[in-house]
Length: 428
Image 1 (cartoon, rainbow, N blue to C red):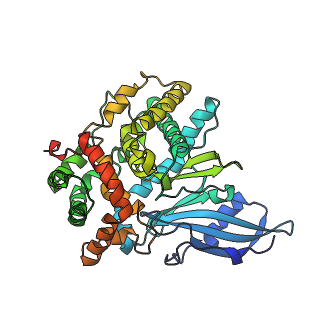
Image 2 (cartoon, rainbow, N blue to C red):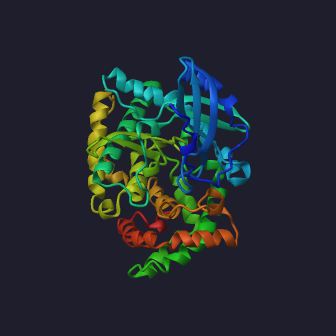
Image 3 (cartoon, rainbow, N blue to C red):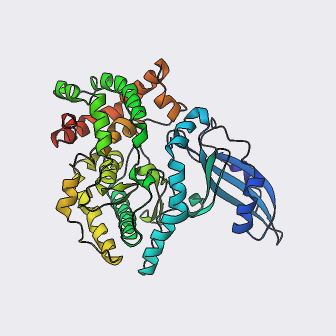
């Protein structure tokens, strides 16, 4: 095959690629994965995704042209995931320990969950194959199979997922949750790292600061959303104290309820699909397991439906989405011989209103949805999002006043407000 370096596209020309990511680094991966290769003819790392698709790591696609022992050349790609530079948000990420958690997920838990299904006679792939992990240069790094080779791709995050994609995603989430819950039943609880997800117990002060930085522009922007009777929404917006209480309540899980390892960051960009020739979804896979947390599936459901369902079905099908998830969950729990009583749909629906779960609806509209609805932009990065200065305020105001976000909020905010989910005075 001819050298294919010429037609390599780079979706983020602004990304700085660390110097130590070089040919030598990949030799051990190639020796294991491509034992018939003789030498590397070319090596080119590029960004794997456009800006605004991932805020906590650098994702690269590594292109190789390999000289094979039989004289042919072969083009090979891998996905490489590493931490952000220390001064671009990497320090906060490293201290948050989310890469350590992802390391455990890929080394131990995900292979064990897939094995549970295999033992029950089902082939269910939950995550991409992780070919190599290591810790160096102050960070943790992963080499994954390149799902792009099998034509896996993300769905447009701004448009959101249609009914067919929502059904498949909810079924995939249920497969993950069922295996994680059964695994805990057999092997005991997960390590303490999994008691917290997006919110860390020893970082509440930082969460409060981050809330205050964003709330300034958010509150200002709400004024222009065109909400009917907007005074009541502006008045009831959470105070910093209420936000912290909301964070704290999320650390407790109801021991009587059905609990599992939640994904913690389940939205359309952390899902990939490939398709049959007729356009139907063939396979779907989950990625990005940095924020997994033991708790109620309600947390993933609130987050996912709010962020990822297409606008025309988001609220109309809300309760139906929960049912679709529940049906597959019960199916998988039975298949895997779950030892406790099966969760009831009424209990699952009720859990979406419980005080320790609803912060996921708020995080979705306060933190993630404004970014998801914002077109790719070189400023779309963690640094711009959290910087506490005039530039940061300007960027956040652009996010919170983006017309596509505003029109969504005219529907979503009252929906959660009327259900009591945005009744922040409950957190005293």
